[in-house]
Amino acid sequence: MDVFEAVDTRRAVRAFSDKPVPRESIERVLDAATRAPSSGNLQPWHLYVVAGEPLAGLKQRASARAAAGDPGDDRQYPMYPDPLTAPYSDRFTAAAAQRYQALGIERDDPDRPRKIAGLNTHAFGAPVVMFCYIEPSMGPGQWADVGMYLQTVMLLLRAEGLHSCPQVMWTMFHRSVREAVRTAADRILLCGLSVGFEDDSVPRLRTDRAPMQETVTMVGI
Image (tube, rainbow, N blue to C red; front, top):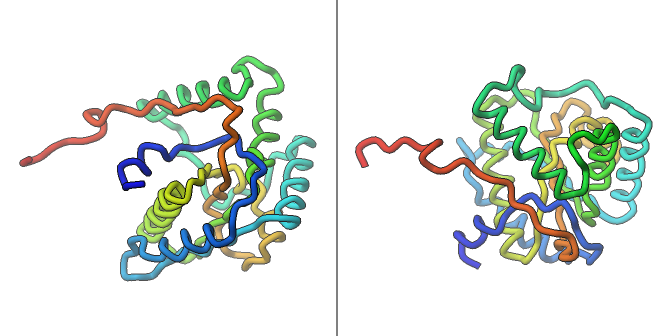
């Protein structure tokens, strides 16, 4: 699979099969991902790969919290700007509508938030979830580095025939995740990354993207 195909086929999959993910595939991906760009070579990411019983227990605890209406832990960082203005708010709204309608959750369903939380806390059935942390002392440049690292991981997963879904939702239950992975109490959970083979019985969804001309300005080229 070349780079263009990996980019084109990468998408946030929200339906995974229970087919086991080979450990050697995960190790091959994460070993190659060490070459991701990193300003000053700080490599500021801390990644935990969780599967099996530890993941099942975490899913159960997070799902129980969501089902009980738990609003989640104190946020370690804002998920989105407040207020979220156009055109970003328009893109967000359109993508959310496409995403959850494809999963059978209508926009006017009064139980919509609980259903969405339930799907997320089960990691959409993924047998592996990677949790990515960053130290609180790190600045915007290092957060950008972690984003490039995660993108590298997601593209390499495609080369292994695997799919993924980045989930900021896990930050709502960061204390439960911290207990599962036993990381330092002050580290910031950036996101979870669900990993596995796609469940082909579920209709595929690709959310729309803004045309290149809307986000790119050519200067001197």
